[in-house]
Image (cartoon, rainbow, N blue to C red):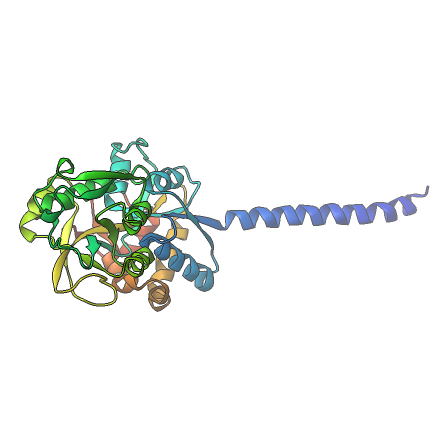
Length: 327
């Protein structure tokens, strides 16, 4: 075989090899640009928030963000800490416990804050026709408890009970793994109340299922007792409107901050891009998640005494935003 003939035969093979290599490189680059977003199950406020953020990042910044629902925060935090998810969303209590090493899953030292996208506002709901009016009226009633997939949520529930002068020993516990199951237990008639965040699709579902729900009154006089259990909690005003389902008159509801988180392995430029994209496209966020009406760069940055991602700090510094004190 002549060298010319051999060269002609080898040329297609070389081209095929080059094409395969290019495809492999392209695949690796695509994988590097895919970001997992760990969140709570469908039906929760945070699932909707994560969906809104992922949609905006994909459509406005070309970032391939995949929403990954989990059973609860106990799964979210290790996923983000171990870089199995590059973005996550969880509440301040869960994140603080994970960083301080007091969570059941152990210390998650790689977690970093991006900022607070919006506040959680929650309450205890009962059926619209129930004679119960205040938290104190739950004494002896069937109350969802445990929250094994969302363990620190039990502390939130205990704090709200404390506003009415109650402890878990004063109620009849119905063990559930998470808030979705707690809501289902109530809807099925196996509990006398349920705990959830305003704005979650599940709340609307339960409201329709049972023929109407009503929020129990939380007395401001009980906040001091609640903060002995959960220092990050506070009260905020709610008025009757489509967002505050079950609020029949102006009243206080329980509030605690929600946090976008990442880990120390995600490049700073990526975090800066995420914040900048969300700030520039708030209207699109609100179209999917109305709770993001309060979203802003200024509201995101709060001083919890916890570490922020370098990219987040760079963004806030560049835009002359100083950390707000927490309530």
